Amino acid sequence: MQQHDTPRYSPHLHCVYDETSPVGDLGRGTHYSVLQALAWHSNAGEIHQEAVAKQFAVIWDEDHDERIIPCVEALLMAGLLYPISIIGERKGGITIILNSEFSVRAGEAHKKAFMDDVARVIDETVDSAFGDNWTITFGEMTDTPSLDAPGKPTFHRQLINDEPDKIDTYVRNIDNLWGIDAWN
Image (cartoon, rainbow, N blue to C red; front, side):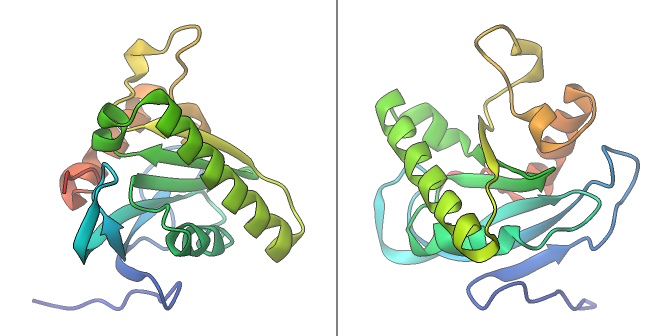
């Protein structure tokens, strides 16, 4: 099997798959990478006796803004990467999509505390590394665009600028190919 070189975005993250430029006609230059990191927690948060390799997707827009990588590293070092299936940067904002298992098993108070911790880590990282402030949007792999109703927004529009159903298909295809929402 032919091996392809993938970039080294970080010494703490292994790049499994990388699209360096837009593929197709979704959003404004949408493309993605699949990264892998060691995790000591299951997707639901239980502590493992041994580390496991966890894959997640980074969704890029047209500028392939690598400033998201220090945020991912900070989340990894803080032990907060385990329930994240997707992280994307677009227009000065970060969208974080939580895996289905965490979404289903974690209570609302636990999810809120987790999201507060993630927001704090990202805010500190973006401020110290770039002197900037980014908005943070959370979603769940269990979100479905057809359920988008008042008081129940979905992550789709914040992640990629296109029709929610197209974005949902794109996200589900990444999961089908790479198992980013796999329960472990």
